[in-house]
Amino acid sequence: MRTIILLAACLSFCAVAYADNTDSTSPVPDNAKPDGTVRLSGGSVAAGIGYTWGHGELKTSDQSQKFSIKGVSVVDVGATGFDASGDVYNLKALADFPGTYVAAGAGIAVVNGVTAVYLRNEHGVVIKLIANTKGLKFNLSADGVRIALKS
Image (cartoon, rainbow, N blue to C red; front, side, top):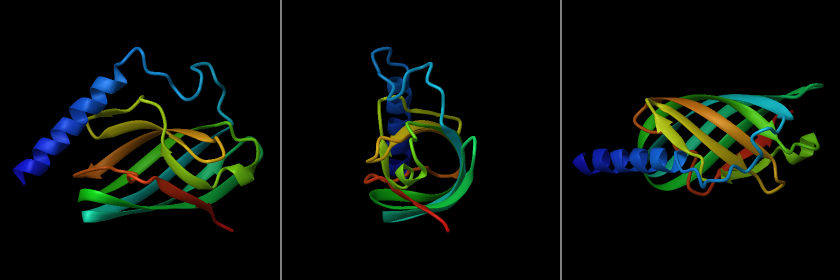
């Protein structure tokens, strides 16, 4: 248990240190206008190999679309629930939104259960996500998280 606490403290310290790095580049310009917004919620559970799940809604100026998320991670421990919201950039068409999202850029912050991270998929869509966690940890998974549209 002590190792887990030390690891969590180290990861939090590193994330905050990188978030303060003035040389970091954001995957979207500071003055970029979002193409939409997302809200999502879900959970994660792990004991070596973890699983993340959830659902959300994408809103653009002319439509609203529900989606699901899921992902698998390794070397993971803990259980948590999360609520998140964010802005979506580089969304040219709804068909570009689903895909596998991975962390993009060095702008990550972890403070008092709030995580901020940029995620990018294979179509170039970027989500600037702010998540509030309830529990021991929050991890969208080492190999990314898969977003699929619901019909």
